[in-house]
Length: 340
Ligand SMILES: [Mg+2]
Image 1 (cartoon, rainbow, N blue to C red):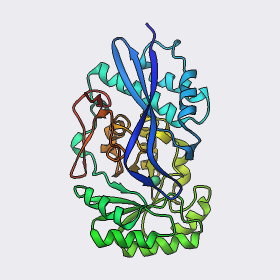
Image 2: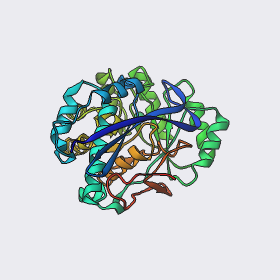
Image 3: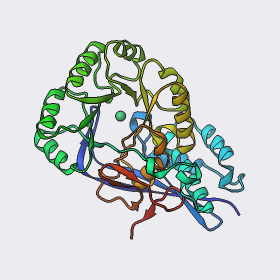
Image 4: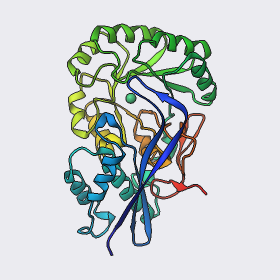
């Protein structure tokens, strides 16, 4: 019997308007994928990002093209994902949805949570940061109070009001801060000035200070600052990893950029071979994609897996967070189940 693939879109509503250096939003539409075979349904999710050339229409157009009739079952995941990869170039999030559904199906078939299948210890999941978007001082204060249980905050900078945002945050909390500039500091001189200032403010590391297109500029910055730099917009696929050695100190792996769990784990090993630290982040996603990323999180150094917490209508239940620590469920596969 053939594998049956179906998909449907879903509007994730945000608790607060979420603003970063290049955009602002109140909701995020994702596509859920169900892969049915042998009475078992594997679930996946695509959370497309325009930064990487995808939107809801491109995801659906890609998924319509996928024809798995020549494959026997999801255990042929290596060949299936090779086929998916060459079907159309790009389409990272759409490809991730298929990869997640295949992994979820395999875990459910074997009755094993993915972390166990990979031989990982669930007690070794890292703490996740909680992200505070760019906002007015009043809203930022409110968000920080709501994030009380999280020991680490990630703040979005890269605009004209960086100083004001940081002053507001430091008025309310002394917590560890991680800064994501989302390519917002456009010149290397400005980036060095900002990073050296942030070091004084007790920031742990800086994510993507400069535009991804300016790798030479980032390299120049790297020689003039001591805070670690983590690549996000520069770290998309496996083949990006070796290029970042010596320019960045670590990479941010996101399932929606790297086409899913299979390549995410390859990136983990490539990054280790290059002496790079590993962070795992997310888009605005439901508990399906967040739980999938949490399954391999015992392998990583820094987690930023709060996308589902920022939403108010997550249709799934999965990984939970207790005082910032990711708690993996015992359920098989990705470990996400539909809420009643
Ligand atoms: Mg980032």
